[in-house]
Length: 387
Ligand SMILES: *Cc1c(COP(=O)(O)O)cnc(C)c1O
Image (cartoon, rainbow, N blue to C red; front, side):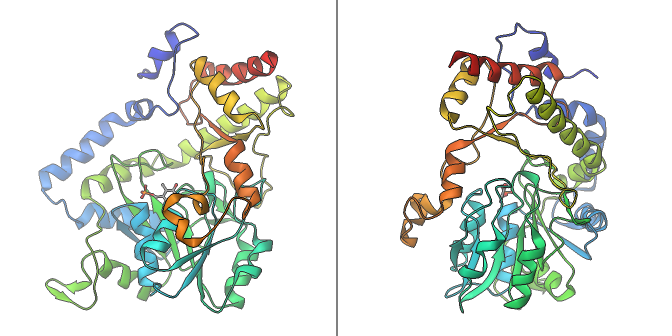
């Protein structure tokens, strides 16, 4: 294989490399993608149409869901799901404060109130033991996030959902292909929401999203909501919006879906290699790496996220050595300026807040060259020696 990442590999040790090099992946599928895109141009069928329908069917089949509905983004997948469930003003939706803003943002956007529940510090996912206490008579739904590619602990969540007759909207934006107790993330509840943002495990050539469901009535509502609430052109049964997955995106994603299993394996191999390297460098107690999850959980490593009590110093040290890293997420959602109206203060969700001060994501993608991964670990080792 020859791709642009070589450039960095061949340069002197102090050179910078990329946190995520999507050109490396594109180089492996260039001809397939260009051919698929050319076919869409030849057809001049850009809005919904056969490519979108085929992708929807292929995703539904792969995940074991009855229906999949394409839409314009992962954020829209969450918003359309809440709208289809009739959730809005006066309703509460329980979710995690340690996620990308779109999670709670979508709840607020439809007029409902996000109610936060703290995370389990090991998994970074919502702590099911704290859920029951957050349920009120206004609670309509739970929105768990499968953060970084690790499924949330769904069994206790589903027990509470059943007990209180709640809707479940899964934010599986980072977790396509991951499994919990043998079932795919996004297929546990009424709505499974996916993002095809380029950096997700299945990333398009721009924005895109999808919702999976097993309920035919829900599928029909979602299909209507994304085209201004109509089944029959120019006749509108409800107020909807324009939120469609582009045919060009669908064509690219159909090519990439065929490789998703290999890429997932590649990410898992990178994660295992990190664990081995940290272990043999004696760094296992200096930084905390994501533990190998129990057999019930399959992690697909959209991110490989370590923790360090000296995170900011470590990040600066890595940066000056040309090693990329990212902080997902530096400020919890309940402390974001946009959510001041909820009246939260520091200390409300201590595990989430501690995580936001300690987490650091390292490069983890299937084509990541060994030499670059070695440099990440070596530089963390140098950081420890420098203390
Ligand atoms: C990416 C992401 C989204 C939103 O997806 P977009 O396609 O960027 O709108 C929502 N939730 C989480 C957890 C995400 O990582």
